[in-house]
Amino acid sequence: MTAPLLEISNVSKRFAVGSRFSSQGLRIVNALDDVSLSVMPGETVGLVGESGCGKSTLGRCITRLYELTSGSLRFAGTDISSLSTREMRPLRRRIQMVFQDPSASLNPRRRVRDLIAEPLRVHTKMGSEEITARVAELLDIVGLKPDHAMRFPHEFSGGQRQRIGIARAIALNPELIVLDEPVSALDVSVQAQIVNLLADLQERLNLTYVFIAHDLSVVRQVSTRIAVMYLGSIVELGDAEDVFSRPSHPYTQALISAVPVPDVGKVGSRGRVVLTGDVPSPINPPSGCRFHTRCPIAQDRCRNERPVLRQLGASRHVACHFPSAADQAAQAVRP
Ligand code: SF4
Image (cartoon, rainbow, N blue to C red):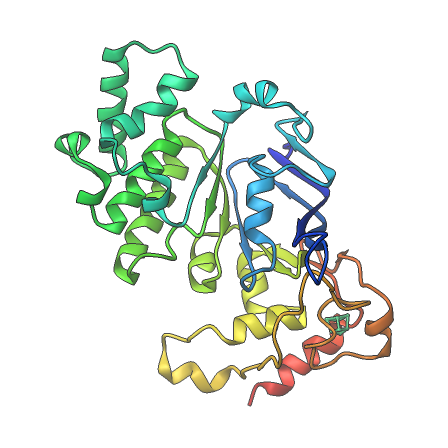
């Protein structure tokens, strides 16, 4: 049996906000709460959820941009949770990240040639000729022209800047790339081009992706499996098509019911589950099931007892006390 490339086990991340001297004092944000997830080689796991659900924090923990508060991370069989910066260095080239806003992650004063060459200079012993050749190859792989090498980031469109970010990310032949909302800032037509490029690179370079996005249509298109997050926890995990066609958690049902249906003739075949209220504060999360304040089928047990993520069917995991009631409720809203 193939071993996971990445194993996230019981990971929690807390941030301290405010100040001891302010009126509200020092407060603790529970950004991630006991998250476990395995990512297999070659697959794309989509992380979805509303803003503030912890998906980007999880991405930053995976790449060790954030230290874990507790739990562990294993990459290719090695525990990387507590490696020092120096110990992480050889692994840095194997785990890369692409950010949402390429403008913010590209130094505006450096030419594209230097931006793409930077990881090669830092992490390899390549000479300047080799680096020049590799930069030209990377520009070609991501669909940019050789003469783009001498330009500055501001001379490119948003889609082209994201291509530069991707070229930097693949420069060192990584195995895992965390893509943090890689197409959210782009026009829809450009989004499709970048999604196609990522799919092409995955096949060509044997890459594994963790794809973070709030746009479920994009996630459905790219993901092998999806993990739905709510207030710092995974509430549903399963094969992407299966979760989209038969969501089991009330929160997943609400998210999926809000995705626009391209075929107007099919709009009436799917009911809309409307959630009331806002996502509660991660500083003071609700007792029991974190979703009970917005769940349309919440019962007393939900307010007192936190559901664990448990297996429901061959490849599905759901954190809900009453997943079958959720199924019935979802069917009830369908005309
Ligand atoms: S455990 Fe209860 S509140 Fe939470 S999602 Fe399930 S039914 Fe809703």
